[in-house]
Each structure stands twice: as C-alpha cells, then as structure tokens.
Length: 161
Image (cartoon, rainbow, N blue to C red; front, side, top):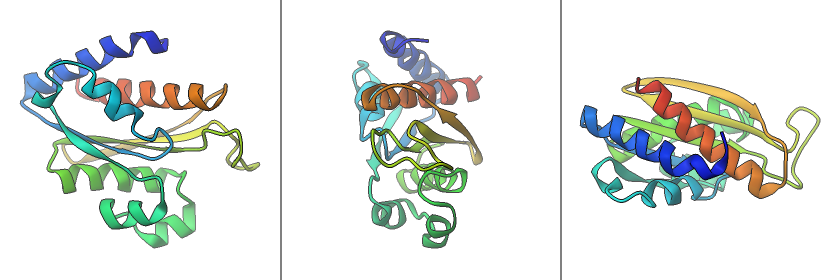
C-alpha cells in the first residue's frame, strides 16, 4: 500500500473505533508525531483519538510512558520489549482502549549490524492484549517514517476486525 492511501486507512480505522465506542492513543519515537498528524487530518478524529506522546528521548519513554529503564538498557529503544511497553503505557496513561507505538532507526545514521537503518518495531495494545512486529524498511528517512506510520495504522485497524 502506498502513502497516498493513508487518509483512507485512517478513515477506516476511525470507523472501526467509533463502531466499538473506543478511543485510541499513540506513542511515537522515530515517526516524530507523523502518525498523530495523519490521524488528526481526518475530520471527526476527536470522536476516536485521544492524543499521543512523541517520546523521542529514552527519558520521555520512561517518564511519560512508564517504560522500564532496565528494558531500555537490556534491549535498546528499538526493540519488541520497548514498543510493547510504550503501547501499554500510552493506553493506560491516556485512558484509551487501544494504542500503537513506534520506535526505529529512520537513518541515514544510527544503524548497527544488528539493527540496520530502516529497522522499526511497532507495537499495539488492544483491550489489554499487546503484540509487536519488526519491520525493515528501505528508502530515505522520510520513506522509513511514512512506511512506519502506515504499517502502524494498518496494524491497529487489522487488530480491530
């Protein structure tokens, strides 16, 4: 799916949330607020989107989202454990039934052999059940951010079926 479809994907997500009477929240690192921007570009999003946290620094992940410093130290910010904690923390702290979280390496610097540029972990928390998936996106920084945002939104929508 291409970036120009993001508006329809968000609209579909909003309809699924409204049908359940649920609200969602976001916790973003590498996307830097892009997901929140796309969600709020849809008219009526206040009926299903509470808000989010751009947790770029680890201190913000810990302080606002409740991510354990131990998890950050053991696994790094770009990890399954951290995005699961971010998603759970966003849902709990913002009072939402579901949330998504994104942490990754958008590049062009910052990659390692174990976590190359384009490595992104996305986590979802839906009614207390959390899951996460690792992605490896190609392209420049903006491309990685857009692909991350789109996959995060699609992933949440799919989990609401």
